[in-house]
Image 1 (cartoon, rainbow, N blue to C red):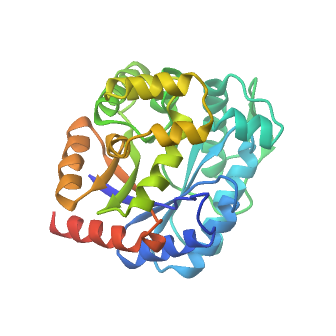
Image 2 (cartoon, helix red, strand yellow):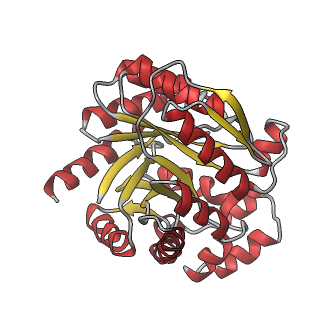
Length: 324
């Protein structure tokens, strides 16, 4: 099982801290850094800056919203980062959320699985250096070829719902899951394998983003809980949390209370249900559950409240991995 690090993009912390997380991950020997995008840095700009401040860590950029960026801008961005940094660079595609796509960017968000599928086909050709002519219902590209060197790297699709899982099975080398229990991971892995078999392809690797905090301070627990508020009533996630024993909390979330009221009702135990939180012994045990459920890669999203840039957590996990 591989381990990588995610720039956490915590909204309650200075944006510049993400660069410190990247430097720590590289210094400690983690092989890969995920660079997503929320409300602060442009992902390609941050990735290029990371390449200039680190020595060797590979860069996976995304998941990038297919309803926001065109396939050409994604391919140009990936090729630009690869050319400017000399690093191995990979792309992850995702659907993002209605808030990000429709409210922030003013773009329509519909038929996201079809949009993922069409975008994946286009960017694969572009990154291979091909001249692409593809006219889809939601994504298209006619006559463009990268002027920079082709980028040979695996394509990742972020998924959770059945349709997106099928897209990952058909189009990706890696499927990304975010914040899932081992039980949900096992089911999604089985769905992926079945869909890949139906598509006549090998089963893609499965990577899982998990919040991580070793011996967390109280403020770290609060940071992780705040990040979960929006998931408790979300389709699919709500059912997962009910299965994990938090049915009363999901019922409250579905009543649409003030976010502060919901946060106050969230127990500390919730973060450990979908993350690596606690003592090193507890985390080691939890990792084995994710391994048994089918994770090929664990992507550590370090808590940084009370642990600036996640230094202590990343160091502890690096020691554990070196010993294991």
